[in-house]
Length: 315
Image (cartoon, rainbow, N blue to C red; front, side, top):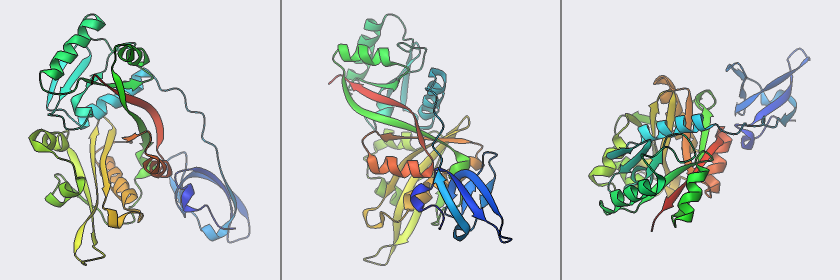
């Protein structure tokens, strides 16, 4: 019997290994590659997959319900590493505006205690201030509502006619699990080049570029020979930024002609290595809850869902 297949990378596995002297031993840990695991003490151990007698996936331990404190910790890190151009503080709500570049940089983020995140004053008056703030900037009034911490706020917005426009899964992972060597060569730079921005394929403008390059980020790029022209082009990109032990991973893109070659995985691993060098120990990313291919990729890498958030818009 051979060892676990590539689809089990990121899973906790138990294996029975045959040693050279004919004896057997058990190995337990998280599968990093087809020939290495990460043990509980954070040490990486290699093995010969041809010497695996048997193996099985070990079910993940029951994940405790995320605490409001930890949710706010991650959301503060996400907010800092994707900084809006304009921020107005209303109690413990942050009203963010960046000329419409991304919903995250153009929405209210509650960061106070549940149930409503501690706005300044009574909820109805606070919501009126939010509407005035965004409509005065020709933007759609919008909330980013971390769940389950602010479930009561989400319900109150729903009752007031704020529509749910997008559900997002916030995934986390220890960098020790992610930071093994990428299979493809990755370049890390402090700023995105023109080719990076071209593959990003999102209109920026001045404020969008300020958000993208704010928060002390670093940018990952993989170049490959184009199968049609033979010229080296940017094949995959990504962005990382670290804050208080967390690394936010964003802007993962792979050019169409280079998909299904493991480039996104190498981008994430390279960003994890850089984040580790910058002093971070954990990573988070946000992905649409209905993006099944991306969710599957991140699960294989070792990510798990920590919490979710929804966008509520007054259209």
